[in-house]
Image (cartoon, rainbow, N blue to C red; front, side, top):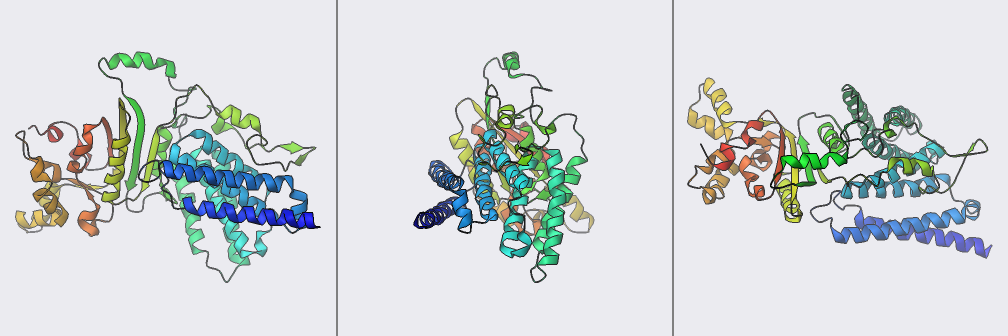
Length: 443
């Protein structure tokens, strides 16, 4: 009995230790720039080690822990946390192996129904709802279409069941999450692709073709290593903090782990016709699945920072960090999807209402514009032309009513053109950012 008690005490101590370590990385930025560097990498290593030690202990002492009161949902919660860590690490590194590991962990929890019976405990039900939301996100990233459809249906049923079994609890936020994922998947599926958005050797040219591409770069061949993606639109299609625009760009900027994965149905290991209850490490759960989905010959995915509705200050800070860390002979990509405004179009609209040109200009430009024009801009006037043209048109990165704090001017990005820059502006005002006379100061 003393031995059993010791096993239980060790388990609880390991749980507390793992949770304390996880708290240190809970609020770490989920991208590789801006404060999520080596120090967080060190913490992540410690958290992974703590949870793997915890998992190994419960696996080796499952029978004794079950006798002492260990619940299946507790096992599911540990596995879910490990899956969450793997997914967060994927967002920080863009390494596909972390995304695949997260999927394998979540799929094991789903197949083995670790949270089954949560209708009796509100706290466990919330854990199950969070698990479904996270598994949906991972499945979306991996383009596991059939699994996404199944999870959406189960998720809707779970939220409906929660409203019935926990009448005193408000599940409005979870209903909104259901609405988001239904709208997201419906909109995304409206565009039928004959091939994955990811670059895949099944449909696209093979990396061996790169020498032929090099012919077009007689002087310099740049490597694509870093990308920053963000969007802001009113009522935009999104799931959690992932908008449809940034999701599709993420897909386009990655290698397909396996050309056949998006068609591969979920697989569950079985023993004598009964679901096996092994460790949820990749070595124990369908090892061939991970082997089929990884290709050591593929180059690494570019690192990506996906920012959800950042302020202009936050956006510029991350861009600056990317530029500072950009390796030699490399290029960075910036993707901005948002609405814009033009001084000249604004002026015409207001003049039609009987206002003077001076009033129109005042309404079009925010206070921040005047401050920038009188300060930063004056320092960048060259003999090539007036730099005010860099601050006439702009993009909105937030509600227009908030004025200058949400306005991004072409001139805000000029300092970063010291490094190779590939700029994609998905906006009705993208012409303001067109390379040429405006950016070079000619004309």
